Length: 154
Image (tube, rainbow, N blue to C red; front, side, top):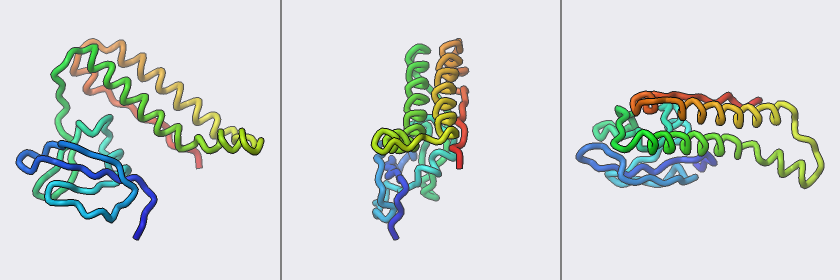
């Protein structure tokens, strides 16, 4: 059965469950080897993580689990990483409605107001998140910073 959703192929170290590599596929039916699993983008998103590095594999059950957050760099580097993660997630979120922009440019059909409002809200929240992260003063505070984006209009 073919599913058009995005899936991650996660390659991990069987001794400790740490993720060693990952890539995106659209084919859920790929048969992973002993040290690879396939997981949907929705399942990873449900773990409320900002990057794959915050996950590991429960090697017994072959399930993705959220790890304890840790970081061994400078506060400035971590802030930049978190901001880039947020921008990337916002970009991905906005890209789901990009077709409205293309349709308007190609056909002149207007973009629904709720889509324009939603896109504006995503950009605004991204700016707020970036500002809030820049104002944090400890690595722990940056690691614990959580954000969520609004749901797309129906």
